[in-house]
Length: 92
Image 1 (cartoon, helix red, strand yellow):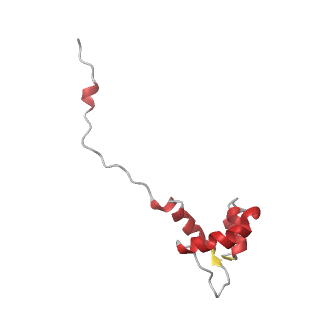
Image 2 (cartoon, one colour; image 1 turned 180 degrees about the vertical axis):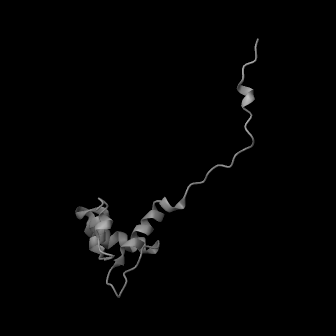
Image 3 (cartoon, helix red, strand yellow; image 1 turned 90 degrees about the vertical axis):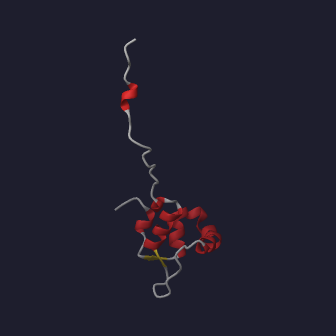
């Protein structure tokens, strides 16, 4: 088992369970009341009516995108062929 709190949750978790895993006990009620409605506007997974919870894998994917983890990295294109001969010393 891993230390990741989201991995400890069932496949579909309640808002309270998610809040405890994401922000901890002291901020959980505030997070449920004020943060979730804001996050839903940004694509946070909605409650699945059949399972009466939010799909935890989609919550994880949301946060990966939210933090830019899934955005990838831009690698600079090479600017041309390297000429290492310019570093050789010429005799004086």
